[in-house]
Image 1 (cartoon, rainbow, N blue to C red):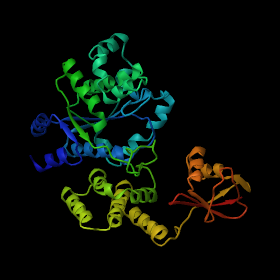
Image 2 (cartoon, rainbow, N blue to C red):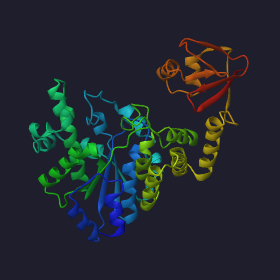
Image 3 (cartoon, rainbow, N blue to C red):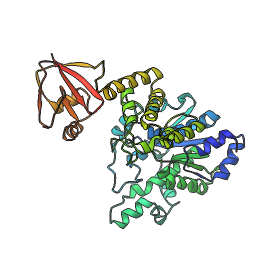
Image 4 (cartoon, rainbow, N blue to C red):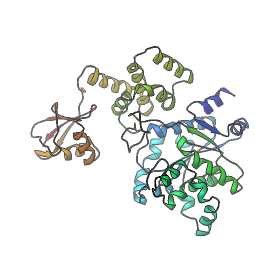
Length: 396
């Protein structure tokens, strides 16, 4: 196997279906069509999404046609993968808001000028009932119920909506319409992507897609998969100090995995990192390198150096950042929960409440424990949210 193909088919790869067929395609000289679909069920892309986007970038560098499919129609259902209950249906307005900055965020990894950007509303919004019936006739209910999460729900007497049963068929039909040679996705997407292969055969497509699955990246908690739902994600659009700080908080046992899946560190260098950990290298040193790599990827090298300096000041020297933003707010007294949202230290009042309940809020170095606390800002006050967020507020 050529070195480039080896990197393509092995680094950050869980499985290839069917490997022999894909190797033939890769060596054929033909320009392949590579598909990756993502539903805008949230507004942020994170480095968990980045694992697949990085694999897509490898195909882009090969000169293949890379397709980023925005599932603006399938998002109305929401992928039931890994869900133990029926998801709430998103409105068209919510979907539009969520996908507003997707392309901008994806451009942190992909060359957007070389990207074929598609939306599955292009075909689903125009389908007649006759076409829908033709599509659904290609699969049986018993075939759909072979999905592990559906089996578990049935076993536990939990509902499965008809729209959820349609989801794998809709994702598969995307492959028919896009004529994809290869589909990329997480290991949790294997069933859906195999449906794509079957539907391409059923519709007599000139190509049948092969599949590359990538491992699921655990979040900063080291337990759940990276997701905004679990608040354990590192977002593409987050500030350098947030990315740096979050990278430093990952468990030691995930260091090598993060380097492999989330950075551009050379394949051979990964072995050196793994060897260093096993030989007793301080994990903190490697995490600092990982944090620099991530900040550089999503911002730049100068930002990485600044973020590292600030991190060192706050944690190693038990200090505070030199440059803390100061905000002037009308009025003298405010409920702390409202103040946290207004200053963007938290994104919602519920997040602000959780922060206080978990002991993560300090005002002038004193921990706040009362949720309904008010703060007098007639003089300057220093607010610290968690370990990394600092702000100064004063009334005007």
